[in-house]
Amino acid sequence: MRGLCGSILDIPAQPATGAEIPGPYTMTGEEILEFLPRVAAVGAQVEANLRGWVQRLRDRRVTWARIGAALGMTRQSTWERFSGEE
Image (cartoon, rainbow, N blue to C red; front, side, top):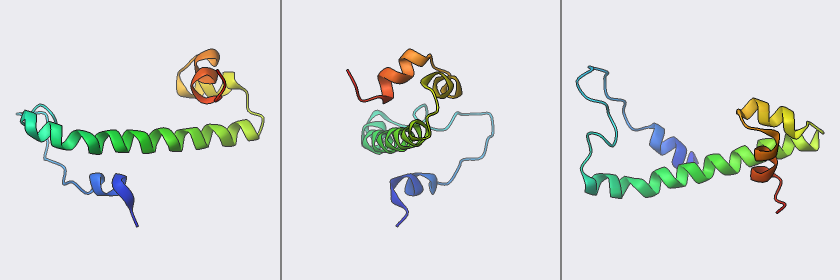
């Protein structure tokens, strides 16, 4: 089973003609509203996957600073986002 990411990636790419940018710029408001939950679901899947990767790194004792650097974040921001502690 491929999941939601696979189904979204199956949407045929529009050829780059330079005339229009594909995506929300060419969609009606109703089309965007209909598509929005799919985008949010993919975002949630990506976030969950990212958390898993970060946890694997932490299990291997990789520092928050190194993880943050890889993500373009500060050590503190990385810890706040992924540590699960408040």
